[in-house]
Image (cartoon, rainbow, N blue to C red; front, top):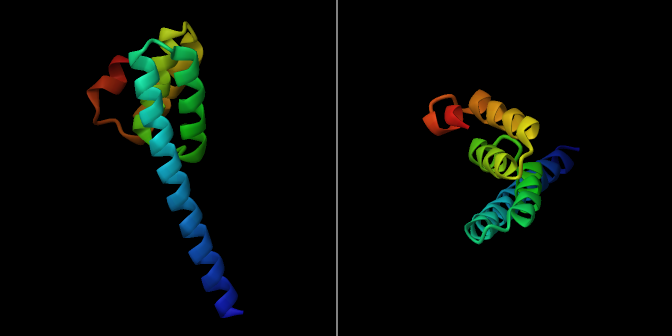
Length: 96
């Protein structure tokens, strides 16, 4: 039984690491898309990144910024506030 618990814990940690890596790739992709003013595509990539790493304040702030550029103000505000709840030390989040 203990061996099974250790295997499950190891597997869960591995999945989280894979999710974090994938979220990072999606966020980088979204940055490039945003630079090229492809905000809809960037928005989709950031939603996926936040889905994989929902407690990453930077991804939430990036999603908020993208939503504001798309005129999705209510969603942008919601995600900015979520980023602030996770990390209230970043002044840029308050500006969003």
